[in-house]
Structures are given as C-alpha cells and as structure tokens.
Image 1 (cartoon, helix red, strand yellow):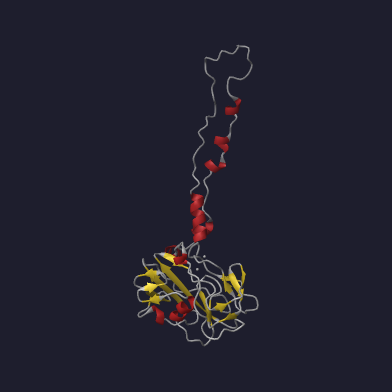
Image 2: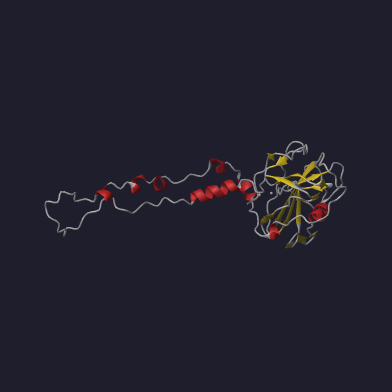
Length: 263
C-alpha cells in the first residue's frame, strides 16, 4: 500500500497500542524509480552561444578606437564551457539500481480516482472495544485495471479518530478486524475466525467471483504468491498471510510481507 506499490517495512505504531506499524507505500521503490527517471530526463544539451562574436568588417567607427575587435562579453562567456548541468548529466540514485528486477516487475502505480481509493463505510465486526489490544497482522493487496487499489485506513473503527502521519493512533473503539493505515495491513484480534469476505464487508466494498470493489471481471486470488482455488471471499485471514486479489491484467503476486515486530 502509498503514489505506487511501494517498499514496505516497519514504522511507528500507535501510542499505547502495543503494536508496531508499517511505513506507507504502497508501492516498493517506485518513488526512487520515479526520481531516477526524472533525473535521467535532464538532458546534456550544449549551449549554442558562440565563444567569440566578431564585429562586421564594415564597422565605420574611427581607426583610433582602442576597444578590442572581439566582443569581450562573448569571448569571456563561459556558460557553454562551464555549464555543469549540460556537461555533466545527472546520474541515477544508486538505490534505484539496487532494486531487484523481480521487485520492479511486481510494482504497479496507485490508480487515480475514487475507484482506487474507496473509503471505509462498512460496519464494525465483533465487539467494538476502547483499546486496540493485542493483534496479529495479515497483509491484503488489491489490484484493478493493472493499478493498486488502496485498502482504506479506518476499517473496523469508530470515531472520534486521532491521526498522526497518515495513521490512526486513537479511535472511539476497535472491532475484531481493523486497518490503521492504507498499506493493506489488516489487524485481527487473536482467535477471531475471519475471512476476506469479512474484510470487504467491514470495508463496505463488494466482492464476488466477478466483482472486486469497483472493478468487474474474473477475480483471481493468491496466497503466499500461489494461486488459490475457490472463491476469494472464503480465504481465511490467518496470521502473517500475504493475500493478493486481482481483476484485469496479471500482476505478479508477492509471496510474503515484512511484518513489523509485535504483529
């Protein structure tokens, strides 16, 4: 989950929650790649101003004119020779070159518009408790039309909400499954037997064999990087599962997720 499918890793957790969070995205090195591509666009065009500008031979000024016959402004113009932007093309960030090719192939940008960023509008499942308490993490990725669909923050919680750096740090109450940030990390109460169907119901988004949120088409589901037979809705939200749902062009699924300690 963040403008692309991103590199993922541990981040700060909510205050008093006893649970580490996850750095926002969604997208896995694409910000670095986008920067590298932008930098690569800085061309190496050379300034075309001449090093020497010669006055016309028909200059009728007196022969006693002691001014130099060469335009000193042009002769001393060092812009073309010393323009380091032109002479030295930008080099890509070394971090971009270090991204594995497989990871680049799996990367997709975040889609634009409400279809790719649907808000949490569904019900809270289970008892809504004032404290988050101990949780186990499940990671769910959603793709439609070859783009990332953000799993909304705020699934399974009730206001008032307190936010910090795009993450919910406090809520009026927390249900059996919640999302605190739009990274796809779903926090499930230990012992709760919940499925992907429960996640989408609490999210307020449709899920069937041929419908995934706002997208129509055959829904494919992968668990641990492998295709899963049967309906996506029936996939259980097991601790540390990596679940990928897709409609549209094939996106190579991740096989695992780097969950932060404590989840």
